[in-house]
Length: 242
Image (tube, rainbow, N blue to C red; front, side, top):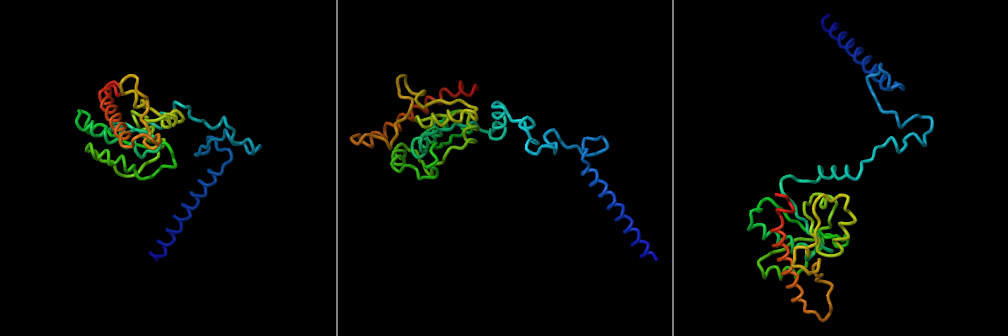
């Protein structure tokens, strides 16, 4: 008798739960969902059911402004742990990796050691994930600096997360201008850290006259980048306001 009573009790509880669930479903399907009798509230400003083509008009969808997009990018990609310096060049295979490693070396001997990270990117998609310039590797080795790995194409998060962006050629300058809406930090050409009258950009090692000595061109590139990075270090307090 006890077993029969227990079984009947279980069935009664199941009926109660089933009825409760059905009540909730009926309320969810209530077409007048703005009624105070319904526990569920759904926005209906964009949907009327009378004119399907205009049910979701543009005014019912709020689009973020340019300044709001910057705030969103700042919260998504900005790191509060380390300050970032991004070096950009056309391919990301030679000059920007060189600048990254020289700046890293310069920072390691300063009070900024452990507080700033440097990274390099290219601005031409076709050169993404290419081996770095072998000749530049040899010239870097001569001054005790090692560059390894592959080139990487710059993404919008890369631009948004950098406090300082240093462009090394016209192509990278154009790239940051085309994506100015996501950039939060300072943008400067490397030439702005060189003596007055210097070119704003660093020579392209691949685009040179046939009669120019290759090694001399690379040595000039290395010396220009080294001087620019040293002067950039001295301007960091003003750029970072620290």
